[in-house]
Image (cartoon, rainbow, N blue to C red):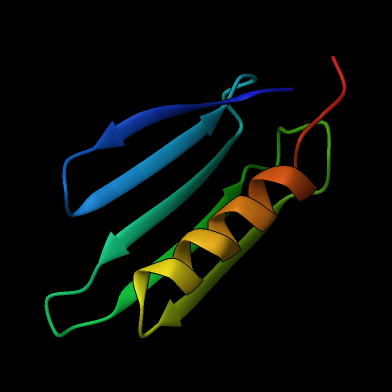
Length: 76
């Protein structure tokens, strides 16, 4: 199942899975650094999950966001 970019405003970048039951969000923190969050709802066909990780640099945060999207892709 594919992911689409739903928001990218310079502070928050968010992707939503095409089934609407999972999101990955990358956010710049006001205090510095970045937070990446995975949220898979209980209604999803795969196992529900919520994870949040903080990073000092954007490249590392983007790499984790990519890993989560690839790991949580569903076959259509």
